Length: 223
Image 1 (spheres, rainbow, N blue to C red):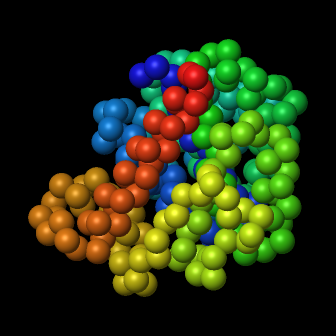
Image 2 (cartoon, rainbow, N blue to C red; image 1 turned 180 degrees about the vertical axis):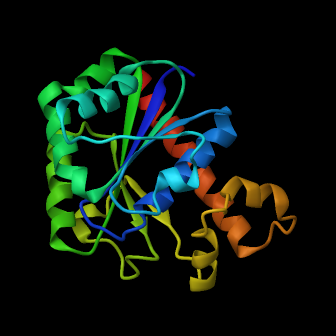
């Protein structure tokens, strides 16, 4: 691995499918690399820790100690991809901290590639927070996630650019199925022999998008 990717899945809005995206990314990394390390910065359950306890640690940004415990492993080029499931309650504090300590600049020196997956919401705070990140995050590192199960009417115009990850909406019964704590995306791919099933194709398409996204981010960083 030429650089270590860090996926920061975030949104200032609740109930937008952020933890679902964090689960997808974490399981994709486990399948691709055989290892991953995830951080759960959430208040409510179920959270990423409930779904993937073997690779997930809890973290917080309440005080200086908690911030350093979270940040220190992220700026190490150890070839273990990281995932942060950043709760909406910690959104402002986390990115304020990143700006204060020069986190993005530090990653450039350490061969670490941050990929900010901003899960869009329909409320005004989502648009304002996106504009804030556009001013703070280097071009190419900020990617909008359009979860079509939540935003069925499409993205706000300001967010609908080149760097968009579209997650198609699943039928309600399949959404309830994948929300079970015992469900594994990779496990389903291994166990389900019908490749034409809607869920099988949805997972494979999601994994392919993540593979292409990571390759693009790393090549941009190294160019």
